[in-house]
Picture (tube, rainbow, N blue to C red):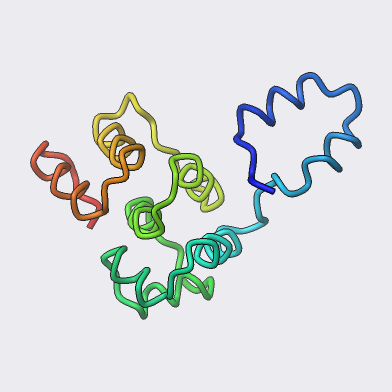
Length: 141
């Protein structure tokens, strides 16, 4: 079953006459308890190795393994690098940021708008980083 988006779930929850039925019907749509668990789910879904993810995310394999082991908490920029490495959707990216206790991307912030554009248009991390640099915004790495 494909995960439903947040707006659909919110709408269904508002119209639900019974919470127990809603919870049972949507069990597969609830977020994982931790960012590490969700990262592992996404890594498996995308069929990537950790080595490939490290390369696509612009980070060392050692640092990546520390994140996946729960020994390191990535910064917002590093988590965004991972999201680009995973070819995550905007919704998946926002979910991972929330699970890490980091601020979601906000389109009224110029830097965030560039990052959102990159996610929505399938740009890779390096193209987004180049665009951030050319727009005099802080790069992701």
